[in-house]
Image 1 (tube, rainbow, N blue to C red):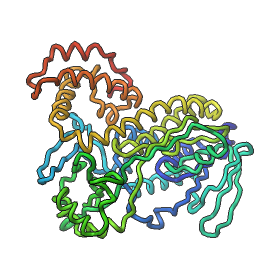
Image 2 (image 1 turned 90 degrees about the vertical axis):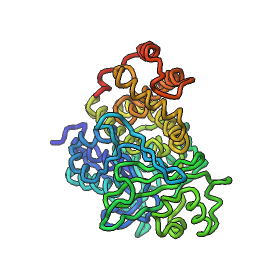
Image 3 (image 1 turned 30 degrees about the vertical axis):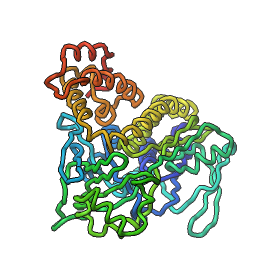
Image 4 (image 1 turned 180 degrees about the vertical axis):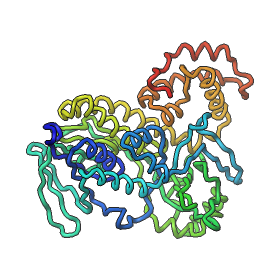
Length: 458
């Protein structure tokens, strides 16, 4: 006999990273889960290239994978990145460590490889069924039915649901249908910058042509190039630039203009991308934006992940935040004994402030990556922050570390980060070396901060 509270039909719209992970949690709980996905199954059909900004897996994303028991399999897909490798216009390199402890690394992982593994593991529960090339057309929020169109036959079919979970990404159809139904408070803000994907191929015998254990950045102030390693020895390269203006995507009219720009601004990268201009015009130009939602649920419908809070990719937290959503939703199911009418509002209340906080921090991190990292004062503050963490670990953790290497709620990391930034500003004013820091003042300022709750510390 299935326990009464598990005797529900859970329908998920969207079989991306978040939908697939959530289906594992639910399948392991004993729910029967049906997942509809508009795109083909990447395990069987290739998806067009060009929009696969590599993923950075960090602690927040690792813990949910551990909870469902698949981290050991995921590890085979990972490449550790210990810090940022900055490339200046002359090709000179500068390495900036992400953290100061051996375990403080983030991991490059292929979207296709990870989502394929998640789908395999979901199906292995015996309770999850995926349906691909199936596009959601409508939701009846009162009668708990959906209409889905088969993308091959163009035939539509109606399905009943007990609980509908929308994990269908930044352009979420579920969210748009909620809005059409009259639910207000959704916003979508496009960044005035777009992106273009390129590739640095592997060298001879699959060798990496640049440092394998770094996230490479070519920071140029108003724009930047980044590169993340892949298992096959290649790097996924992404150009982020304004849509319009002097240095922008609109300046690239032909292959010659692309080549000339890269030769000038990213010479060392240009030398490693043999088919640069062809790739540039073959791959689509992607858009970047932030989605926020006041209401994540209505009746028996709940949206989360990018569907309710999409963020720009500059803090490497989109997937990690979505995975943390899944873990929190599962935690709420434990707390409220699978009573979804209590779970959904409690989940929204817990996650919304954190989602808004990481959205803000991701936007700020774009400026840091493309510009601030080059500034000597920024670099000095980073060194001071590491030293403060060493001297006062219960009171001071750099904001980047709070976000990437801990489970401190994003909203707390954001608020503490503002206070800590003021301390760093005060300590670094009028000095140009860590040897000149007034450590007695530092101790006084840092110990005025509330100590970090022990449950958030390693």
